[in-house]
Length: 165
View 1 (cartoon, rainbow, N blue to C red):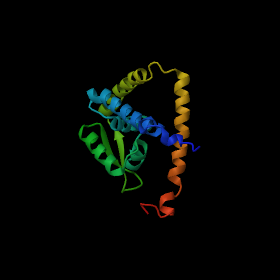
View 2 (cartoon, rainbow, N blue to C red):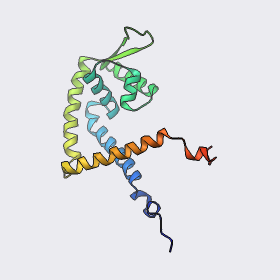
View 3 (spheres, rainbow, N blue to C red):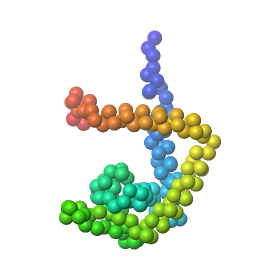
């Protein structure tokens, strides 16, 4: 009797990968919803908090931290600069690089972000114990390590002359 591969036996909406992606999208949307009163989204708030906490940073550093492309981060910085939340200053040792710094208004908005973030954490963690959260974090770290391994390995389909080779 043939056994059914359990990965394909479950409906797609029950697979861990699908649930993870859907959950991440929902968390980001909920965070954006909570940040709407201060006219920021999660990426903008993250960028401001990073510069606030770690000091002036290059556009490349900020793109890596937020996890978006350099062109997208450039547009985001443009919008924050127009709002008077950040400034761009020349790098003292490299004329090609501009450093992003936070303004007093930006720092004040980061404090509001931290208040919203604290409330959001309480809301999203409701009825999930500390032990459960730690277990979930551990599992997500292991999944992340597996993803890193996939991303650093050759594409199997391309090696075998697959459909997208």
